[in-house]
View 1 (cartoon, rainbow, N blue to C red):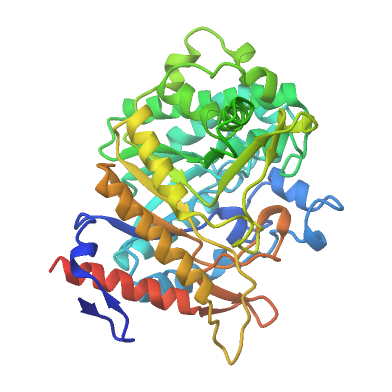
View 2: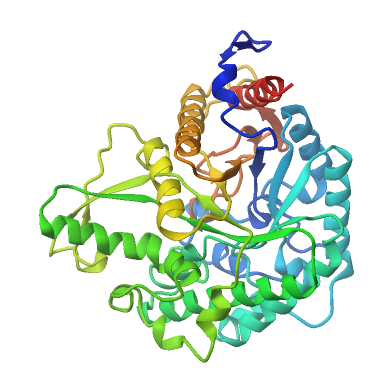
Length: 460
């Protein structure tokens, strides 16, 4: 056993399940933390427009200031250094690079990421960069956004320029974060930017997102870059409420919507049967060799996992294809999401067994809780328990032969949580919005630090 400075013990043999080069990191996204939306030539994004539309976000919250990371990035990198994380996943704001989506490069926007990258590397922290975390330039949205096939090629060109600009310091790239959310929450349910509710368009958007991903992977290969590139999907384990045929069919329908809608085209070369009836006309948007482009070989798959679902058939649930969520709610996070670490193991095993043997990384996992700051301390024992159990689930996946390479806690900081505004706190670090954006590591941050230290000691 290894004993940390705070007295916690970690089992050395268990820690050594993880390979010595396993990536322990944390993650953020540009619009959620950067702020500075009107500085240094940044263009407007769909989230600027959406969050400034009445009744779209909690209390009308916006990302105008967010965590002011644009000005406080050095402090945030130092926090990561204190926590001992060796890897940091963040996103580039497309409208900070190309204010209108393409055309002339915004040198001031590039300079910010130059400064951030140099600061990270100086602190011994390796960057993992997501090219699209939902902040489409508003100028492209006004031309049809992801519903317009032209946006596919704007994204490919933006991605190619980022590979050229930053490829000397970034060796791990993610094309898209959770394209399911852009298609379904943004274009089917209207809960995310751009706030559209159109099932037919949602399928087209899904296809265009995937095609832009595939073309960007090819652009990366054409540059003979020496790093690695992948995509991040949000995936859930879906279980039937019973063995009745109708509940098994309900499970299959929900699994198609949540998981197969993006896994199948990327790894199997086709859209799953029944998808058009539930999500819209993704298949009708296919042209020529689109599916071959979408299936461009990847170096890794990023998996974002937060919860699981138990479902039953219910013919009255017409908006959800006759599926009723009956997941037990005996333990939930502040988002109302049931806690189920075994689902993470099942998701990773399924990908390994049914889809691909390429390396996997858990690029987001974490939990929101109603954190309270008392005497400049946040005693978030529920989050520590959540992290312990989900990291344990990674060990179970490794025992099954899954090629797992990394784990990134969402999130480094409390931040703008999309339509929930600032009402939900996912961070390892508490951001005191009422006291000048003070950063205060929570107990979970120090637990994560001690865990990472114990892991490194187990291999020395």
